[in-house]
Image 1 (cartoon, rainbow, N blue to C red):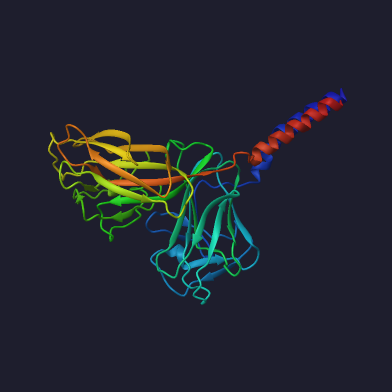
Image 2 (tube, one colour):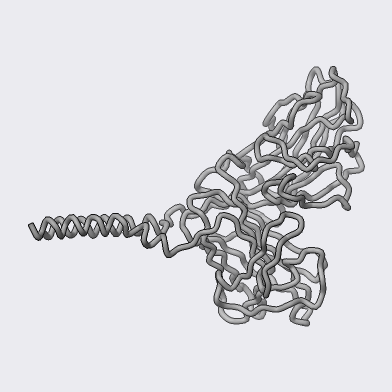
Length: 387
């Protein structure tokens, strides 16, 4: 009888053990970290709160820059004069797909006029080599990442003597499994570029969360060899298609000058000399003014390095057409061509494009909950065998 009671009590204790361990662990759905900051504050653009970083790292030193920027998280930073590797631990939801973005603004904080170069890692995987500068533009490195354990490790790794790593901001934005849907569980996606074609350089790169639920950067670019178009509409909503692109971006576009013209876009990967696996996303939306002609349609074909990847039709009053292509093997430069197809009445069009490269990541990491469950099972098995 006593042995039976021991078994029953042991089973109950072991069954709740994972949840008891988890109860001591606070995870975050969305994180905005002002690295080196001393006060929390609300972002007037997104209404998101930016928090301090001292809950996520215990090393490094904070500093307030002597220069001001139009991006508040970049006015402070945390630098790491001691140790070759210093890591943030971000308690995120698991398993979940996140957009994780790290921001860097040197601002000559050390008065040495020597912007450092160092490595950025995520869960032990090389994310990017960060090359900072004396310029006034911040540097961002962004990755789409599926969490595999409760604590996501973001590390700054010193690779050269005297090159002190630092960081200005960290963001973790939840995406959901259907966003960038071709991504597989064995990779992360490193953002190479995200372009808003047709908008001039004074147009904002980021919008409020009504316009873009994921607070992405869309770099405005006008190209002189094409028509740079704006349909005259400005609205604060996003399209309910793949990846939820903002209409503030879709309302701009480039289009060929003539019906027989193609759009040619070289995508430079020269900083990475080895062969890469790339993920392309094209956004096509009719920009024909407030009253487009019903009979005007755009039939076009997407080629990458001369290989046809997709044929599509963009219609007046239709919603955005999203074309995702993955994987594409690239080395050095990938040449994108958007060519007119038979039956088109308008030249080819392109509103926006995203380009990622795949990072191989380890899938062996266990979450805290999984580890606790495993040890609970082993403990139960031991009790049963011993009684």
